Length: 115
Image 1: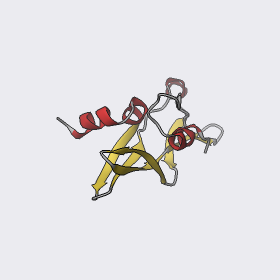
Image 2: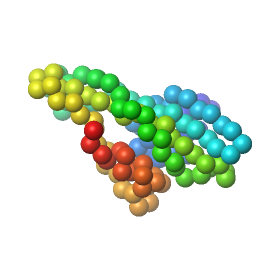
Image 3: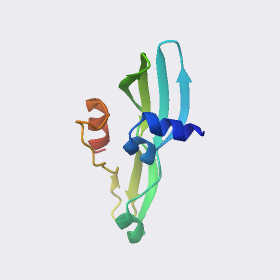
Image 4: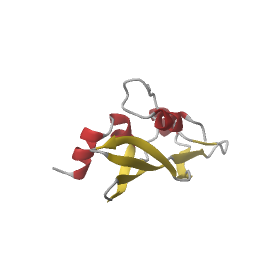
């Protein structure tokens, strides 16, 4: 079984579908995962043909739910996009529900915030 398949059993789809796991470290009392948002643009932006990958946001460290008694920290970088027509820089927002979503309120707020 590949690592991403295992991670899909632990993390919600919004994370595994939209973020690439780039690194992992484990110690006696904590698990750290590094994630970078994948370069998937919306269908509308793709059709416009003027939107390009621009950069990443600064890393945010978010404490997630513990796994097997170990604290879990997600080191997350969101992708920034730039529209070459008007020069606007933006990030995508995700449809999330905090309740029953298996995401901490802090992580939900992070994914919803505008850059």
